[in-house]
Image 1 (cartoon, rainbow, N blue to C red):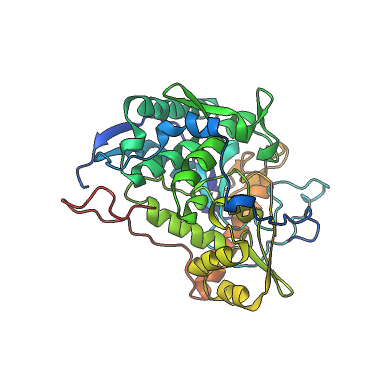
Image 2: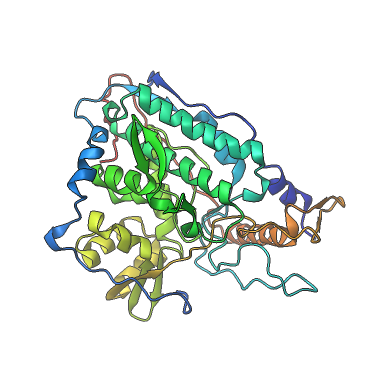
Length: 399
């Protein structure tokens, strides 16, 4: 029987507040059955250049050299994330066991990926129509911020936080509209693949998720840790964190996200004398890892904990082969069957949690207890960059 506290953990996480965003002056200044691996091919010319029309269309968002000292408040988005995202805790680098069918049936419920105990999961099944509408309202608020405030003139960290939050809000908005669904990459908007569809209009310019990632952030930020701030909706990608990015915490949160992903099975595995890595690294290689072997290994070493550092040192070749396209959803992309109820210790039943959800929470609890018994950390602590009066606007900026 699953403890009542575990069921309440999921059942109580709801978002019901209207969204708002404002700009204010800153006072504080391999798996064997997976598809064939992606083989990295070095681009000619040493990098990727967007078509000139794309560069010109988005030139208005290029960071300026003389930023103004403003910040954007993401308090509501931060509150929402804490209520709709379930962190699964640090990776133990052990794949989750196979999901068994519900007792008495052949039905498999909930997330079934071997990576389901890593990263984070969104509580899609608990989001009602009012909550779903609030995501659209919040995305529109962020658009209005961009219409009234020159994002490119903000300090670099403020700009980066804006793009990361807008990307993740807009993606979540689209996924909750389409849910239940199994794989985010199957979603289209008016017949256009989700990555390339217009998801926001900023200062009259249509912008897609790919625009934000590749044509704005990857183009203007040199530090590869920015890739971990973009949630892709997939259980095999970087996690959706339970904190909104802001100008003060973005550098620290990206470091934590990098550590989480690099040291997870989603990011790195060893197969013989070969280092298997997430296909994400091949996707961003033209921007950050032009010399794929050397550049990527240097990056991984920067964030690797002892076990992964040993794998990197002990392998000779690198292959981008790890991926998992299932949605990062507590319910596995489907509503729990309404005939499957879960009883808490007090006898309360919840069809929203479902038997599979209760089992997942129990798995998570056992994992955290194992970490506790071994004296290993069950979470990570971060300190936001400290900015003192008189410090330059770009102090601690993510370059």
